[in-house]
Length: 216
View (cartoon, helix red, strand yellow):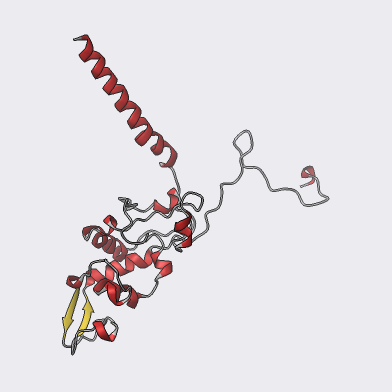
């Protein structure tokens, strides 16, 4: 009986330490993080596109967390943008950090590939734009028609990938998904917080040359 009590107590202590280290301390660090200046909330269309992104499992192959150059120099060399910070995810519920990189990181895909035509065509047939790509195509997000309606957009595919005598028209889900991808632009500057005095107050700017602080 004594061994069972010790085993149970040890398991509870181990669990408490793990919860503190992995849940409580990170929550204390980031629970009051504010949105950086330059980061805008998602629009209704972008939120719908984000749902399409999630439902199609895009986060299983794409991360959204470029790492610092000192930790992962390849991320910067690939042009994936600066290292992400907690404020970049203020409007993400749930976050889509991802843990696999079968494909490139997408936190700044809206900067690298802002073209709507490119994004739509890439979703319809990735290999038309990236030879050798292993990304699956998503033809069910498009309609193949004889003629587009006046209010519909035609996807401009390379000649070898366009259906002969037909046009490819994106469904609303594809248009929303592209709007979400275009919104992924974490290229605004991240400024350090203003320095704090010993008492917690913000320090004032340095006085102009030749002028004492008391004279201001």
